[in-house]
Length: 246
Image 1: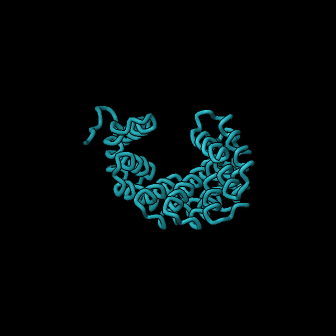
Image 2: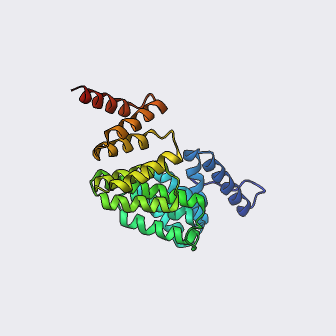
Image 3: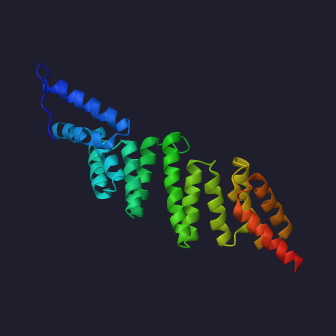
């Protein structure tokens, strides 16, 4: 699709109008309307890294992951310090199963965002932590507990107050028979968010596995009190009481 300059408007002015319109539509989530306009801008100004990033996001949302990678990589060639693009590229690599490239890109993004450890921009830190968490979950699903532990620890180093990450780390540690470490992380999750039922449930399971049935019941009862819809806690209590009757 090509747009012609209106009478009395210079090519540069028209390009600026297209640029602004494309960005506006993109920000409003009107991606199908934004895409042809952004592509037109790119044909005239292939050096616009932000336009490449927008088109990459649109391709990603359409499930066209290889096209998204192409856009993000081109944007980074133009601006290697474009942190948002680095993160978008890392997420796309991860979805394509290219975990090593995703990890490498995360690391570069972290270094660029702030070279001083512990002072990473909170938005970037949150995004990176979420990706480490997702990769950790994949490792956990395949029984690769050590790799999962490593990813969860990386996530918590970036964002320490994530109850779901503490809980999954606890599960991975428990799978390796590291019960005491697991208990620390389940308790951390409870402290961060007392309403996060899974932390209570998993702590109860850990106590039960250690033979501490009384403590297990206590955790499951509290979990069920906090959230009566938490079926797992209800089931465990039912089973353990049935066992006690025997």
